[in-house]
Amino acid sequence: MNPDNKTIFYHYLQQIRPLEADQRMPQFQSYLDILLEINQGINLISRKTPAELYWTQHFLDSISLLECLDLAGKKVLDFGSGGGLPGIPLKLLEPSCSIVLLDSVAKKVNALKQMIQHLELTDISAVWSRLEDYAVLKDRPAFDLIVCRAVALEDRYLGPLRLLLAPGGKLAIYKSHNISDLDGIKTELLMQKEDEILGLRRFYAIERKDLIRQS
Image (tube, rainbow, N blue to C red; front, side):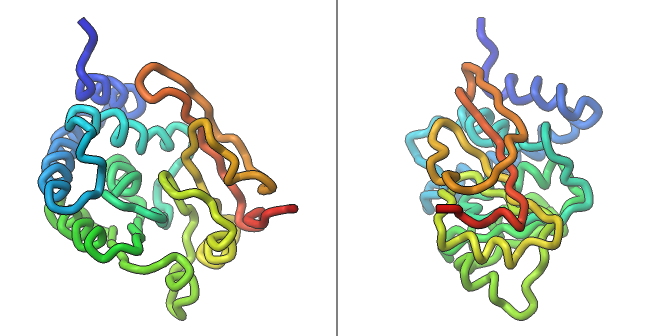
């Protein structure tokens, strides 16, 4: 009999965080519970997705980035956070990082604030703003890492992303088959894997200076 999705996630946690897996599972369960509850009223994640698939399609996928990047002590921006993905799963596994969850939809940001409070997370905030507006704030932070899981890398985002990254900072972007939005941009393939759970998954890093599209 094949293991269920929660068990698959737990086994993955044991692989990448063997000393923390038992401690983190209740936190992820609590996150799942509040996410499902809020999603009934606000469409953060497709309601066609069965709850059990959240464990693999969203939680496992989100934390896979930790296989190729160290977030310890980093200032991180989750651009287009939506339901807190990948930012909240990353924060749960790497509490020492500081994270801003950025989304342009007010209802989603209010939902993110509820999740943060429910999970009793610290050094994490949810901000309602377009990326372009957030990047030109006088007191804007400088991030070591910007993560982007479900947003295409349009030209209008390149300048704001450069402004928000600290010197030496990087954009980390989650991709599968379609990488056409990366055309003309110098990227580094951090990791590529393919399995029956998530299919093809690729993680690219783009340095601050390379957030320019060459024609």
